[in-house]
Length: 174
Length: 174
Length: 174
Image (cartoon, rainbow over all chains, first blue to last red; front, top):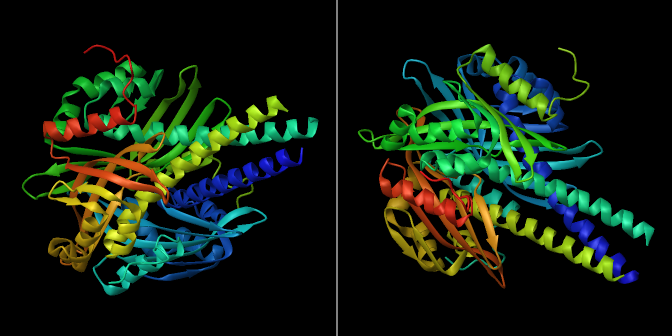
């Protein structure tokens, strides 16, 4: 029986790890449709009360502050009113106990009625941190950097790859 | 043994839930490459016989009707012949028994030979419903709405967030 | 006990299958941020020593050769220096023992400072093969084809759908 107990425990841990991974996928992918539709209640619900969102243009503090941005920031309301798609790629995720880290691409597309097309206004390097709470996983920190070729934008992705442990421990020299 | 039995059953349920989630990811992500390559057989196979696809431009009914669109709708054949990328973001998914719901972004990129670039012709708010059949999960309903800033497009995403339960039960007032 | 043993074994197999799926998601999604940030060490780490990458413009051979492209190919360095986003959609994946196959869309966005926007320079049909090694899953082969409307690009996606078993065994005639 003891042997089975250990086997079951290991299985439970592996399933929990997969569930965490999927929960974080869902959390991150919920943001874009919420931002595009002005769903400040959803944005509040997916963020930690102490969350911080650095969009690369401005920093928003607290789940309430981020929700307020969605509800009433003039730039956000204008982007929504003229047609927007806040897009994220599937993230690379590393869960470490009650914290998790992710890296992905962000895009902000804006509708151009004249051109009958969308303009990719911003494409960003995105780093995220998540925290496990009594109410499930929440977005704790998000930092976007415009992929404009700057050293800072490259370093941002590089740091993000380090946080998700993609960078090999013994990196080849050079 | 009874205790282990319950434990095993719970594990099996959790694994099944993860398998459903992944099956729906795969189903949705299969559509784009099939549409771009005119693979009407694949499009038929991933749809429910009674599926409906409202592209925002036109409504196609039945798995056969949707496959026929891929095989012979002049607009679709022209889009394919001049170069297209039917792109979807990773969806937010909620499985509820033998039904599942999802929300994601859609994009239709078209090749512009002169510009040596792709134009994002359409970016849409996408809502989906899936049904579990004897032959596995199938796409049952898909509705795209152009993200043109209209109230209807915002409401479409908002309704989709409700269907995947992203909207908190006790939403804060305002 | 024998009954439980079989049940546990089946659970372990199902969990392993899900873990493989997620490992391949992570592997593929790691490439873009690595390419954008010039992280040749990461690119080397995620590729098989005998990997081959056919970008549609040029063929790079070996994990070292692909890493060298990231580190020093003039075109890649120029793309990075002026701002790029190497984007992939969530892939459709089929694991078959120690090999796995995937199909997805690729995009290469380049920053246009004058236009204050990103140009979708390339959108591609992407096919991948992965190999399980003692050091985990690795990218073994990647072939991109520009979605320019050519028969070759359509066939590339079509072949990819076959490799991930999306094409029904008994495809309807026509």
